[in-house]
Length: 238
Image (cartoon, rainbow, N blue to C red; front, side, top):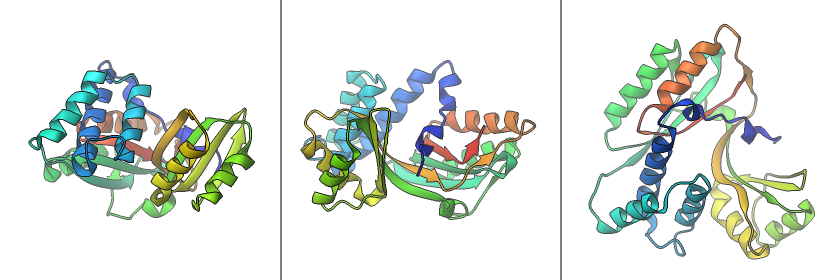
């Protein structure tokens, strides 16, 4: 599997209003997660891990609380997930995950970002086959064998376990996310995840040519500037 998950880059960090965008995206995701699965983090494992990630990214408590209160209130926007795929500069592959209350608007905005960066939005499934949908957990531990044993005892289907520089990284099918997280938190008291999420990891990478680099950065920046975009995955190697 390699350390491919670290190749994912956040162009959003380049923008002046990066923090507000991060807060907005977490707020929207927390709202949807709480509305769909319940507002109690102890009963909604996905919400609990999402809150943990938000705190690690220094999202203020009031942003988290506001999103949960909004979900409990029953009113508010009706967001639904949308996923778009396409080919970027140097024929790299791109997956864009969104939460939207207006799919037509969101599709138009995403397509515009592809068009203006000399890229091409594709049909559903056009690049998905070249990525693996993975649950990823990374944390400090001194034995990958102990981690693997704990996961096997809990009957968790594991894709790979890596150990490097005192850190264990677990890769599992995305459908095993909840089971894997529960097994790890039960087996290792006070576990502190450096990574705890579901991502799309590319099977192979594509090198962006020097000539195409400006257009690739433009595509990433335009997508990150869209309020409806939650995550961007690609197989570009820069």
